Image (cartoon, rainbow, N blue to C red; front, side, top):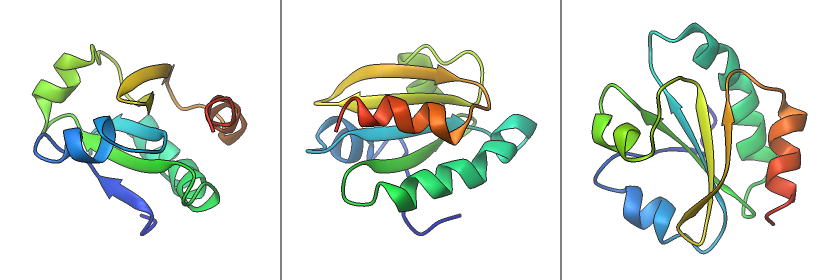
Amino acid sequence: MSQNVKEFNESNFKNEVLDSSIPVLVDFWAEWCGPCKLLLPTIDEIADNYLHQVSVGKVNVDNNSSLAMNYGIRGIPNLLIFKNGEVQKQIVGNVSKVEISEALDELI
């Protein structure tokens, strides 16, 4: 995992995501999820390419089930893009780097 990808959880989510001064890409995932593992290199690239423009992190849904429930996460991988504490965009599934980049570019 890229050193630029953070680990979000129930204790740091408000500070790291909701109170962030820049947009935040949150990847809801699980260890057992095959498509989540396939998406991992793409998330790493996004984190490296958008350093200082977008904060990128992951939420393990097995360890943070209340966060997943709060945001209606039913399928994973599930990407939420936050800006000013609000969800601006949701992308579900193993999607391309281009699709994620286009969504982020609209918000920065």
